[in-house]
Image (cartoon, rainbow, N blue to C red):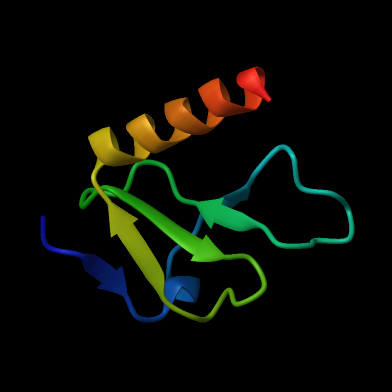
Length: 73
């Protein structure tokens, strides 16, 4: 798989933070749904920085693995 990036992610609208994010921000990522190239992911502390674009299947597998691992902990 070829890694894709978006150099200035602030050009895109509709980013959302994790529901686990606190009001102070913290170490959070934001994702953008509905992008034609896949699922862009960026650091919420750097909204004008780059975003990595993951395949929809790859992102779904990652999220499912995180959920499963959290249940086991």
